[in-house]
Length: 157
Image 1 (cartoon, helix red, strand yellow):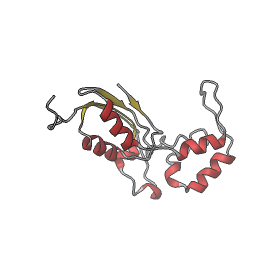
Image 2: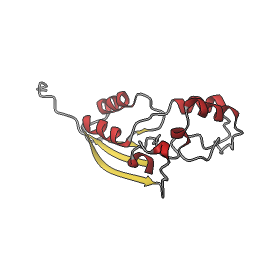
Image 3: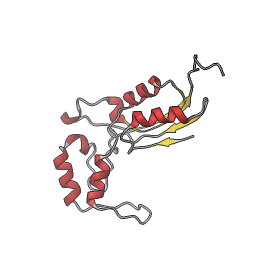
Image 4: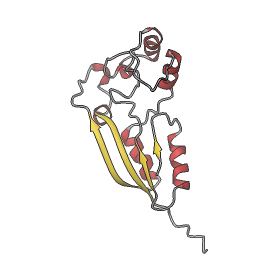
């Protein structure tokens, strides 16, 4: 069993490697951060504005992170600087739910169980009109997939 999360920048390469090393029938658990959700930006300590990361330019977001007085969450005693927060934000994986599903199916992973936690309500502002309903309303997704190895036809051993 394995877990993959928000900051995996080369997701397809990681999924291919997981496919390679996970035994046939092996279970893999994914809970990727959903960038397009209202909480997907991880900047909640700097602003409470929903979907701020989809409404503002990168320059405006960086200004918020570097100048706003953060409301720090308890992170087990760890304190991050604004530069750390900006770096973490910049490294987020921006895959959509449909892209993730497509990549898993392309690699012949078999879906075992999927759970989605959705937002109660999304108010579509002009800046959000071109984003997928699925991506904006899904706050979290949990997927259990099974690795199905393709038999090697040329291998007679």
